[in-house]
Amino acid sequence: MDKIEIIGGKPLNGTVKISGAKNSALPIMAASLLTNKKISISNVPDLLDINSMIQLLRSLNVEIKKSANKIDLQSSIPKSLSASYDLVRKMRASFLILGPLIARYGEASVSLPGGCAIGTRPVNLHLSGLEKMGVSFSINSGYVTGKIKGKLKGAAITLKNISVGATENILMAATIADGKTVINNAAKEPEIIDLSKFLIKMGANIRGYGTKRITIIGRKKLSGCSYKIMPDRIESGTFALCVFGCSGAVKLLNVNKEICSHLKKIFKQLKSLKLIVMNNGKSLLIKKNNNNNISIKIKTEEYPGFPTDLQAQLTSSLLKTKGKSEIIENIFENRFMHISELIRMGACLKLKGSKVIINCSKTLKGAEVMATDLRASSSLIIAGLMANGKTTINRVYHLDRGYENIEKKLQLCGAKIERIKL
Ligand code: UD1
Image (cartoon, rainbow, N blue to C red; front, side, top):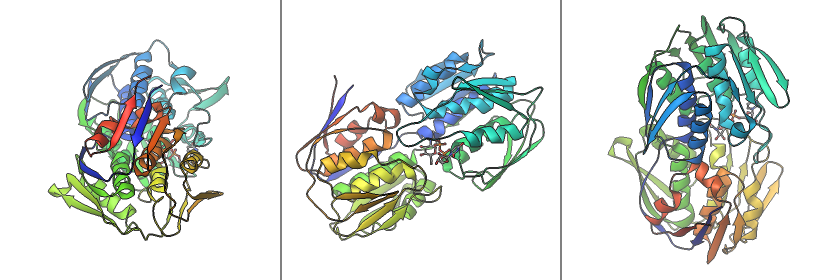
């Protein structure tokens, strides 16, 4: 496994091209199972998670051609309607094939994703939604098998809690079900909007996406289409927090108006961070002034609130501030694996239940640390860039699951960061 070495303590200055959104590309790729026509998607980030989805879809007889940031997919009837543990355990988003497969073939068997470093992450909401549409599920030897006689039937579904993945699974399935499906208490994330726009390009009839109530009228068939994946808002936010932690000025290219206004809103409490929207929202200049007197209280929430996927990076970026800050994690129960690693670097942090308290500006010192999950990994990069001396981050494959060329992008901003190939 590769390592990353960072010599920290320098401000960042430069330009970064933001990649396409991983969390949008993955469900859109899964949606290729809904048709036998050709799908062409562009602005796809080159990531391990994307490769895992390619492997999974190929095992289900989807022909896939990948070139640079473009992927063509064409699905034919699979020999088996089963997704093995080996393919699903690598990435929870694999579970997104369940809805499309049952909708198209009336049956699917998918390994349960199981626990992961950020919590138990159940799938009950995915299953109860599809059950309302007529699917019967059984769980045996770690596999969920769903079956339906005839076609899926549109239904009124109210999600007990908001779930991005469950909204996506039900939404995709409903596009070729019989009749009308209404998803109440749906997730409103921009990635749901992107998936909906893509499905509409395939011919789906969807209204209300981006709100709490999505209405879908099932079509007999969907067709092929070409689609450009939206920019990655979490990668954009991660770079903004790199600047907040290290100072400097970095221009983000390839963003959009929605991402600019979302970042401005969620980082509002970070008074010394300036976000200047340029080029009609296509680029965003991020600047940090020298004021480090900051005390904030932020809790993670569903969109449009502060995303859980930026919680770890925010924690690191606050480690040199002078006030007392509190971050509450509301979405996942165990998303604090980065804390003990940050403490190894001298960070002054306390964990109380689901709350992290940052209450002194000790000097951060480089150390050898271990990446435990995707966003924890980028929080260690931020801390390494802020720290004096050398930080070595082990197990960086987590990073490659969700950040395209992060060390190269940071090098272009003057960071001393290098990948050590092992
Ligand atoms: C997606 C994102 C992930 C992000 C998360 C929350 C992708 C590929 N991943 O994950 O990066 O951190 O949204 O914004 O898009 N839950 C249940 N039962 C379920 C499903 C979820 O209780 O059936 C709970 C989860 O344990 C969690 C909460 O609901 O506490 C939100 O999870 P969910 O929105 O489903 O996250 P994912 O779709 O897995």
